[in-house]
Length: 335
Image (cartoon, rainbow, N blue to C red; front, side, top):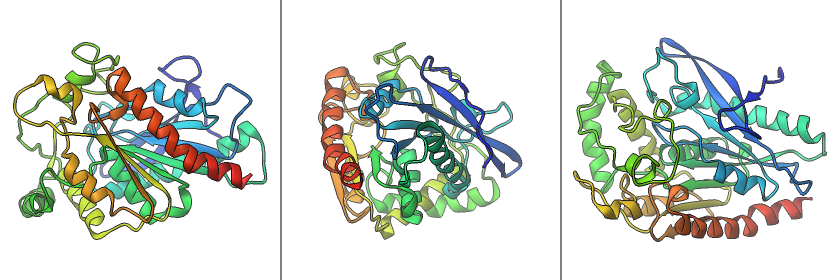
């Protein structure tokens, strides 16, 4: 493999990014963007890294998350998927994908680059690098499906409010499928006319009730328009989850302790998942694999690691506890 051309990233000192050629997806030649951040101390784990996948209509910006892992000695990588964030081109249809397997090329290339990069950075250790995969929301669905099909590429799976099922129950998904499929077949990139709301953006953005400095060009406040082909891809992915994935690696699923949806903004949305239904999420989560831990975070947002400071401190405490029980212990035994 040709060595990647790493450049300083928009996140500032200590962060670099590189472009991955994804190839042709439909009518467009797409790219993805891989971001990296290395541990500063000498107490690092040269054979362990984590790759993070953002949610739909999103991009990687959470330096606190990256530094949580690098402070544990784990090299951190994040992937801005094609048609998202740093990888979005003016000619692209923001957020669109017609099949979740279309992300396979960039995931495979990202994992290959991480392995090569660890060798370049730390030198040959005689051990095969192990890469934990972490995904948020739609990225969690993508990560779970990838791990079920290619478990040999992933050492651990961490899901942050993964979109594993439609709101309510599987009956909602079945009902939507019969309506969506004909439209997705003939007009995959046509917009679905649904109300556009900025409730989640409002709960996280420093320009509203949140505390995170978001780039509205990379993450639109109203999110990308939903399209029929994209919705078909989500429903198909969730149908695979419903059949059972039998993932063999240890899995952690983090989520808020409650959901709060509705057509109007309510203050309670600042301390709940205002996007997904945690009950259906939890029910699907326990069927993902052979070793599944679930952590419900009181006061958590849809992305629990973007919640208010005291809430996310508790989320990180539980994440660290799980890592010490699985990933860090396994790494020590492996060495």
